[in-house]
Structures are given as structure tokens and as C-alpha cells.
Amino acid sequence: MTPLSKGKYTVRLALPADMAGIHALRARCFGVAGGAADRFDARAAQVLVAHAQTDEIVAAFRMTVLGAAQIGDSYAAQFYGLQAPEEFTGPLLELGRFCIHPAHPDPDIARLAWAALTAHVDRSGVQMLFGCSSFAGTQTAPYSDAFALLKARHLGPACWQPAVRSAEVFRYGAQIHSRPDLAVAHATLPPLLRSYLMMGGWVSDHAVIDREMGTLHVFTGLETRNIPPARKRLLRAIV
Image (cartoon, rainbow, N blue to C red; front, side, top):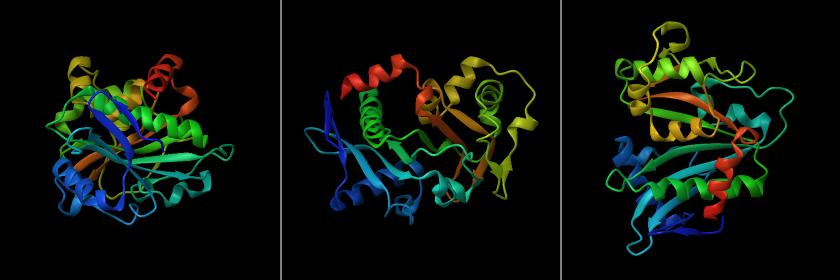
């Protein structure tokens, strides 16, 4: 990955010496001791966004390129029954541990992170991005309008819908029957999920209650061919 800069920030691949800072940021954002480190860290490319003057890490994520046959060995496959359609042969990229420092709400941070990811996708020929998009906490009630919106407008195609694998799930696709208050729904969507949806992404019909991470999450997918051309141009213009 070629380092990119925009405004006050630079995005680049992390070095081994950066991992302590990345884990500290994850611990702050996710509230999990040890920075949510796991076996998937070792095989992923770790990416960080840093303040250009202070080198403070203000955002981070990890990405792993997989073949379609390897989707069952992904982080998300611990929680969802995943299988790529037989006709899908292109590379996939699993995006994970995406977090932005809560004291740095500058929208340039997310834009730069997505621009770097877009450049990597272009170079690698990735045809689909996927991962887990997390809601804070494990209670479903605060997000009833968000889940109603996801059911009404953003459920994934049948060929990609994950099967239930986790012991604790919220089957909002079957359990929610109300119409969403759109203002409340959009306000309670996690920023990462909002970004996926703006680019044409979709979600699973159930959420996993993850007690270890203290979150609810939905499987999220985005076929790169479905990203609106105007959105692609905006992201590529930063590169």
C-alpha cells in the first residue's frame, strides 16, 4: 500500500512497532482488554491513519484478501454460516477492527481510510468486501428503528445470506414488523455500516449478540461492481 495524505492525516500500512498503539486504540474504542487481538491479526494487513505532525494513531483497520473457497476460514465465519455462491470466483477482502479515535471526529479520517482501501481493492482486483458491522452494547431495543430500516431496504441477496451459526442471535428479519423512523434509524446506524450502505452494501437478516466484544453485529457485504460511479470517483480523487 502506498502511503496517502489528506489534510492533517496520513494513512499507511502499520509496522510491528505500531501494533501496541493500534491495540490501545482498539481497547479504547471497543472496551476490550488486550486491544481485541486474535489469531486473525497475524495474517491480516494492518492499516493505520496517523496525525501527520504528532504521529498519533487516530484510526485503524485490518484487511485480509481471500479466495471464495476460503470464506469459511474468515473471522466472520466464527459467527455466521458463510458460503460463497458457486459462480463467484473473484477475490474477497475481509475488513475488520475498523475504529476511529472518539476524540478525533474529523470526517477526513474516514474518507482517507476508505480512499486507501479503494486503491488497494483496485490494485488487487477484489470483487467483494465483507465483515462484521458492530452496534455498541448487546441490547437490541435502542436500535429497533435501525434494524427495521435494514430489514426494509438493505437485506442481502438470497445467494449470499449467511446461515445462523451463533448461539445468541436477534432475527430481526423475522421479528421486526414496524416501519422505521428514518431519522432515528440513520442516527443509530454505526458509521462503518452507514458507509457500506451508501456504497450499495447489504446485511444479514439476523444480528449476532457478541458478549465477548460487548456488541451486536451484522454480517455486511459489498460487491465492488455495485458501488455507485460517483462514489468511486470521490474516493479515487483522494488518491
